[in-house]
Image (cartoon, rainbow, N blue to C red):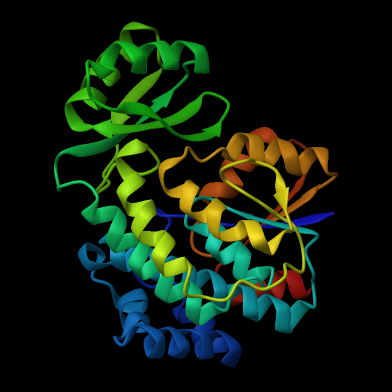
Length: 306
């Protein structure tokens, strides 16, 4: 069985999507649709950068979604491959929902533009941050976060793979957690270059604003189950999509459990659709023996078309 997996923030790079747009009219059309939906030249930002502008959350989110859907449309047109399941890391869940036919691309790209804006505005710049903690078990990390909080917020935000967890919260509390994690024996504990503390309780106001945007868009039946970040379980109930997306903003991304779920469902082939190879790297550790493929340019599409 096949799962398409879609990347989230951090996978962006200047130049992404250009090769797809140059080679596949369906991919070029997606970039044009994004430009029309957003009212500015997102395609030029993806193709040319600059990196500084691409890193701004309100730009990053629609840029990654657009590149991922452009790759998806090229894949659909050239290969006829149909996945059994879809999943995405944080922002990537919107790409997965477009893949499943639940959200229209235009609605999704406008929504994630707002999502990025709301997440950035939920916490003043500099007051929140994130850090990657490597080589510490979950129980020990929970103790670290509890001890480091001291009346502030710090908590696991991304359970990426065994021994790789990202924490988020107030900058001072995250700093304390980094030091405590090192004392507890973490192999590495380092701050991440992000602009806000995603997937923790500080994002609840962003979720509330996002709920109002989601209330205005159509959610269609899902052609395949999407394994969600919040529950790490397959959902094919359109009535639950909005609530799961709202909760996702302030809940941890349960990626390790998502892959365990897909493995349990019999998935043995994972195709990362969109920029970068971050997710394939994570899946490689967890799904040994599975087939792993990436689709981010024309050569990748041709390789799958065989």
